[in-house]
Length: 264
Image 1 (cartoon, rainbow, N blue to C red):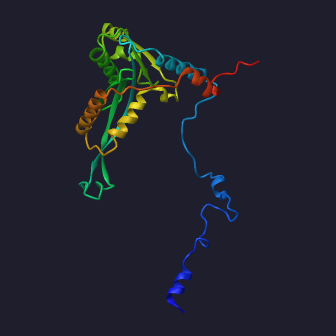
Image 2: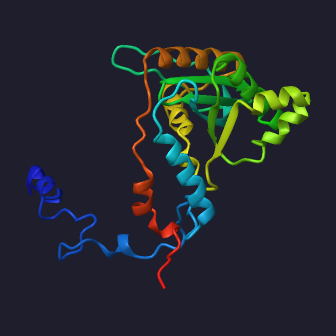
Image 3: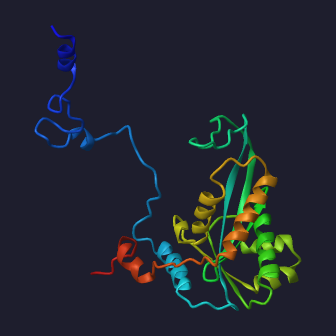
């Protein structure tokens, strides 16, 4: 027997190759549609007919629709932890025809926290690196926002998540009564609903900083501060505002299940 002929007969032709994902009758394999109780996905499922959620959602959305007013700026605040990771082995720099390479092993080096404030209509944001995420840290960040960034504002309207550390009464725990009252008189807090942090535009800024600045291993707090400062300077100089388009009318249609039915 011709060896070449024998080899040819052992290869698959297009007709002989097994079909992947298709049953013999060319329909989709039933395996994909079968129940898979061992698998699950996690996401926040908002409650149905929740007037508390509706109230806070529409309050924030109404605020977003107001025109820009430098005397009454709308500022969104959020905070996120960041894991510091040190290299175990020295990364290899990129070469012609090869990308940079780093070992998949790394060493954890603690955690820092980013406090971010963003004024969407002005295209401005401020980011501070904190060691902790306590109520006291939040109070002093807001105080700095009032006195250093908006000293001439009549009222700063702050959108923030409804966390137990975001307690306006805590200003009296960190400052003398007169000073606490002075700061609070320049503030107006608008809390997002529970399970509604997606309404906070500061999350958009955090998604951006994650992609542009925190998408690599940062070994220590000093390096994190340098990277964040460089990102903030570049983004603020680019006049990048946020065009928020989700309105109260949209919510009443797309999130209709959250609204109580008043039909008899």
